[in-house]
Image 1 (cartoon, one colour):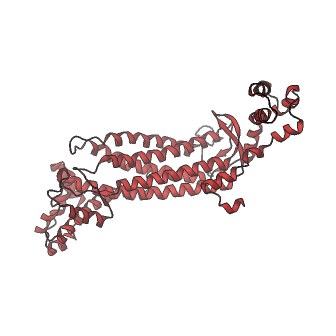
Image 2 (image 1 turned 180 degrees about the horizontal axis):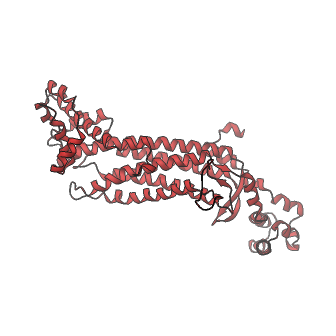
Image 3 (image 1 turned 120 degrees about the vertical axis):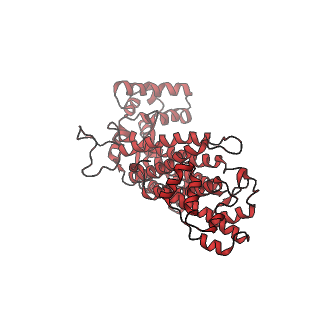
Length: 437
């Protein structure tokens, strides 16, 4: 991943330095387990505890072996005495690789969960702040009925909570180690060694394995990242739409001295949310190789390895980055409540069409067809002639025959649409019951 989209903590998790440290941690944990089992002499283990790898030497060896694990091990054993023979005892490469990679993925998941929490909290703050901020709800991009901006954000908040649950489940799915030897039979390294190693490293034991930890676990993690990114793209797309000049109800933070265009000084573009959308698409693309890596030949091939070197770090780095961007945007979002009201009124009362329809059917006893004709006739005139729907109804003899002017005014009340907002907030936990008493 390019540095532009890499934040330091996540970058460190996926650094080569951290990866090789995880490999060494796994190797030494296995040696400790063998020592407890009485296989490795204690004095040898004491010497092994000071083992370290030499990266430049490892790269030199790799040029000959073309195998990073053997190069890694040789770079260590070259600095040891006879005790070096105990490294990798009974293990196959994937015992070290997959167990070490599990440690990296768990660390990455922890960082992602922290960022999801921050995003969720930022959305919560804005949702509560704008619980009663009236705005137009839109379907198909067209005015539908009034809602509040807080309700829109409450829906996002609830979705982010679901994404946290999914990420926690994915973290558990990949929090497994495997020290079962070639093809997973434990023939060269017994199960009690595996139990001891995984417990030491804070991992669960993969209950059964072949030569690798099964890649449905990895696919679960990557597709979960893609799901989180899909939600962020959804939220970002909505912000972008609401920032359009013709709507202009919200706006991303725009700092002093920031420029939106090289040629048009007036521009304040939604470039942050556009960036979220672009990277979310890339994350989603990484889900495809993750799913295709589930199927490997026999007990293992390495067709998964090359793609995982890219999709695992890049997916985590991108998601970490766009979560932080989203939190920044939400926390600093500019909300134009006056513009929301102007847009609400711009359809000249047409949004009350369903209320009038229901009143004619439920209260006045008209057939749905007759009531629909009255309402639609005036609605179309309002659209075509740019007239106020409310006034057209009041002057329509057929409508006035069934509804008095006072009854109509009561129907044209925006408060009708927001009367259950508190109930919605209470239902999902954004308002305590005491607030509603």
